[in-house]
Structures are given as structure tokens and as C-alpha cells.
Image (cartoon, rainbow, N blue to C red; front, side):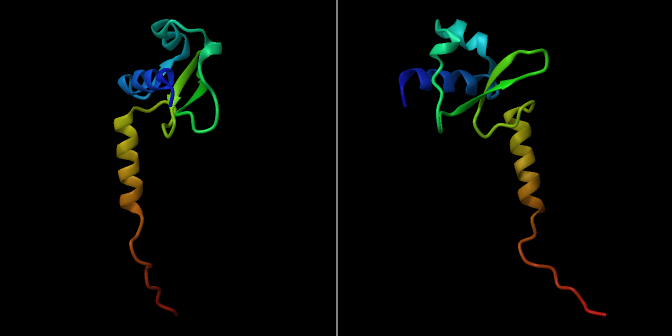
Length: 90
């Protein structure tokens, strides 16, 4: 992982997993063209309502905080039965 990737990931982690692309560029002194892209990079560029692009950490659902996502994952995992139900035949 490059130093720039680490800086971007740290910025995203410090901001609930997402930031406007323009703010990331301004803070790091880079242009949008200098943001690394590729397979397994660690984030996605997503168009938000109003035409603003955000960088969102991989594995994050757009529009939700890290805390909300952890709660969601706990609810989903908690709702999966650990053993199959038994059915009575009529």
C-alpha cells in the first residue's frame, strides 16, 4: 500500500468512512486525477445526491455511519438461525 493510500484511508476512517472527494483532495494537496484507483484499493468513488462525489471505505453502505453498519451486521447475523427448523408433516 502506498503512502497516499494510507493517508486517504486514514482520512476516511476519521470521518465515519466517507468524505467528499474534493475535501480529500484539498486536505492532501492533490487533484482528483491523482487519487489511486484499482482492484482492492480500499474505497469507492460514489456519486451522491446533489452531484457531489464521495470516497467511501470499501465495505461501507452509502448513507450510514460505521456504528449503524455494525448494528446492522449484528442484527443480520443475530437473525440467522443456527440450526434448521423442524417441520411437522400433516
